[in-house]
Image 1: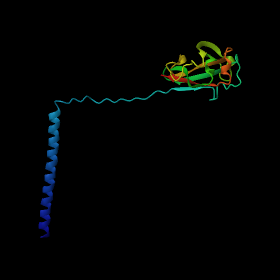
Image 2: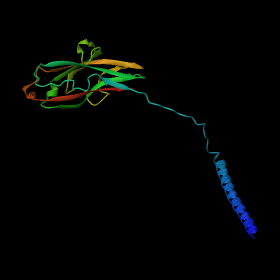
Image 3: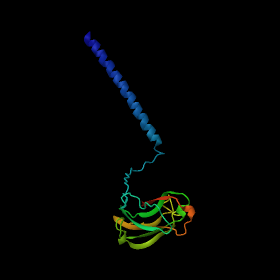
Image 4: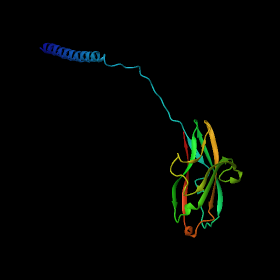
Length: 198
């Protein structure tokens, strides 16, 4: 009796297994037919692998993040010179330009502060006397100095690919001798930004 029950169970199990196999076969067959029907409308090219990586670009200056000029008690005709050496490194050629940001002024002082910027070689923030003159990049007022735009930047130069390239910027300020008494007690500020782009 026990063996008969076991034999019946085995036959039922086999039937269930067969039925499941038949369903799986039907689904596979349906999938094959679907792909076969769609074959006229699909064309698959061989896969191609694409790899990419970005290049590196570094830009530094030698002013140690201190104020280039920190001036007070200015009088008409006062002037001073500072230098900043800018270095850039990249495996590709990059372009470096200078522009300003954060300009502020009271009593119209920025209109009477003149800037003269020359891009040359040699010299540094601590040794401006060694500066070797080059190309004049700007000669005008602080009020007119281009700001917030690489495209409008001045003193542009191209680096040499695969090595560190350097230029020294000699910056001279002069408070105009014709500055009116209305500018007395005025303030002016501008941050210089050197930017490199590939």
